[in-house]
Length: 192
Image (cartoon, rainbow, N blue to C red; front, side, top):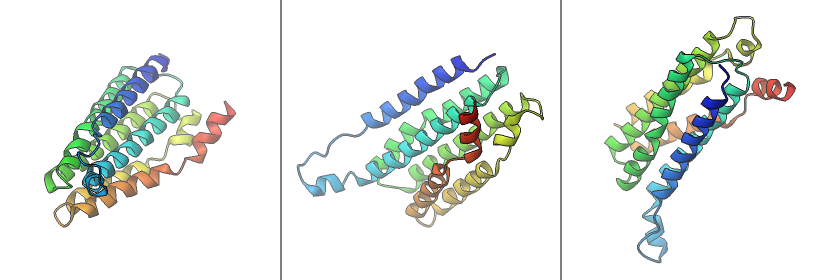
């Protein structure tokens, strides 16, 4: 199977996730800076969530740009990823409305953790569906960033017991690492 339907469906889900997240942003009740400052936890969680969803969309796009064929396992792994990503608007709202309280921050980190695990599973299924001699193994074969992300998310979830802002710093740190583009994928996509 070709990946075009999977990509179109996934792009639609990514769009809906971002749309839902922006709909939770309501203006402050007062026309003052104090009113805007009261929304900072929600704005911060929105920014972190938006960047992470954007990173997943970008990584997903690059992954399927170099994927030659898909199978049923890849379809299910993709749905697994989309499931966890679809929970990001809920956790974004919860964390923002509860001003970075312990349980919402922990669940926020858990959703990010599960999204990272789901992406790792998807990437693994894609690689398993290609011959070991295919270029895709040289281009995306390393999973170091994924494993490092999972470890940092777990650390961030543990740090919630010390200070929720330390957790948010961990979650932001993972996003910053993924903002650095993978040169191998860019070269491969450029050559095709």
